[in-house]
Every structure is written in C-alpha cells, then in structure tokens.
Length: 352
Image (cartoon, rainbow, N blue to C red; front, side, top):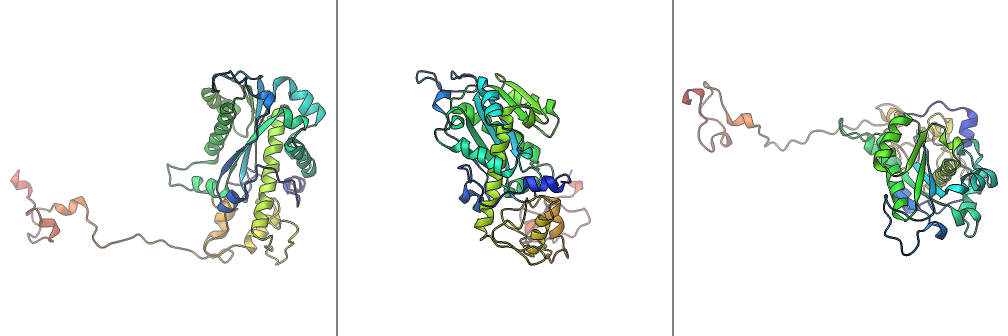
C-alpha cells in the first residue's frame, strides 16, 4: 500500500504545525501503546430525544432530524494512524452554520492554522458549534492497520474492510447515543455505488449518499474531514513528543521543535529520510509505522539501510509422526519402531 504522488503544495498542507491545538480526541496512552481507539463528543442537549422517549435504536429516534457526514484523514501515510471522523447537526443548520458562518471546506484545501481554529471553536463550551453539533472519531493505529493487512493469505484484513468497519461502528455509536440521524453523507475513494449499497444494508432507515469529493460538496462531510485531519495532525505531534522529540534524518540533522518525519507520507522526503536514519536493524520502528507499506517493507529487506534478515526456523520436537507412519507396505520390515507397533503389527492388504 502506498500513497499517490504528492506535490510540494500537498505535502505542505498535510504537514502538521508544531504546537497545534490538541483536541480531546487524542489519547496519548493509546498512541503510546499502538492501540486503535474511538472518541465521542458529548451530544448537545438540543439533539437528544425527550426524556420520555424509548431507548434509542437504529430504527427509532425522536430528536430533531440530523445530517451526518463521514470522512477520513491519513489513508496513505506510512507513519501515524488513519482517522475516521463523523460530524452531525440538525438538517436545517448544515449550510447556514457550517458553510456560511464558519466556512468549513475540504480539510485538504484549508491551511493547518484554519483547521486548528475551527476545531478549537467546535470544542469550546458555549460556542454555536458546540451547542448544535456533535462529532466522533476512530483512530486506526499504524500497528493494527499493518497487522490486519499482513495476515496470512486468505485471512488478510485489507484497509478498505477496516475503513468500512470503522465507519459502521461510528455511525452505530451516534445512533446509540440517541441522535436522530436521517441523512448520511460519506466521502469515498472507492466505487461509490458499491460502498453505498453496503451501508444501506446496515442502516436501512437513513437516506445515504456516498460520493467522491463529498468533503467539498456537503458541509457535514467537510466538518468531519476537519475533525479527522486535526485529530491525525495532533496525534502525530503527540507521538513525536512521546518519542522525546528526537530523531534526525539520514543526514544527521534534526530539529526538536519540528517533526523531522514531516507529513508521514512516503512521497515526503523528510519522512523517508527520518525512517532511514532511525530504523532499528531488527525491529524497524515503533508503533508509529505501518509495516505493511512498501516503503517500510523495502527498507527492512536484508542488506537495505543496515537491516538484518531474521529467519524463524520451524520448531521440531523430534517426536513428530504422520498418520501414514502407522501403516506399512506388504514387504516392509516387521520390526517397526515401538510407537508404530504399539497396538500390534499393521496388517497388509492380504488380510482383506
């Protein structure tokens, strides 16, 4: 798995700023362990069903009808998590609040400073965004992405399946919290019709729209894009600080104030340089790395970048037997091994 070639402008937009706003969706302990995790913001009181309503399900919800957008950040990088975000708000507020008042747009066309400012406003108690909107995210760790993709043949858990499962779990979590989701909008890099059909089978009561570039077309998807991107940026900075903020590139130069691994994308020279300069010859890198990516696998091949080839011999306890060991040909010697004759001498075909 690799990302598509990125321009210098794309890399600049994808590179997190130092000292970015750290939203509550960043779990430092989980990042340190290399674990995947989810976060749900508090549901605004205005979106909750009346106290007399029945328990919420995916079929019944009595609060104000809401639109929910889904988008991701960090699908292609070799470093850091892939973050899926959902954002929901009352249907009538989608355009006036998000597009007109706060100018949400696809996170890839907003600067890091603008994204951070929007996220900070969303998390600020008492703001119009916090009072009317809710959001959630799922951070799929680099370790879990890699381990799923590197399962034996036939059991591989590819990144598309992981992404679908994360999306479904987030939407179900929003429903479970009592939000009346009527419309769902999803940005996808795959075939929209196929992905939409899968979601419609899971959420039959919602109107679902899956489209490419949905993060530019639908304000709730734009907001989900910002939530996902800011969370990923903050997660990268948090992981950098957990490492002690050290690690030079191949040239031996590092800056503790900025992340030497850059955006984490394979097409970013800073990322590749950092990986070459900070690779353990046996274990490679820490929980920040997706070992299933070609960039990582290539560096770990024997003889490359100082790596060491590790061979794992098949365990042999010296007492392995096959079923056929208990049968013998007609002309086979009668004095077989002790285990082979434990229950008597095997009979030849003449006995039948």
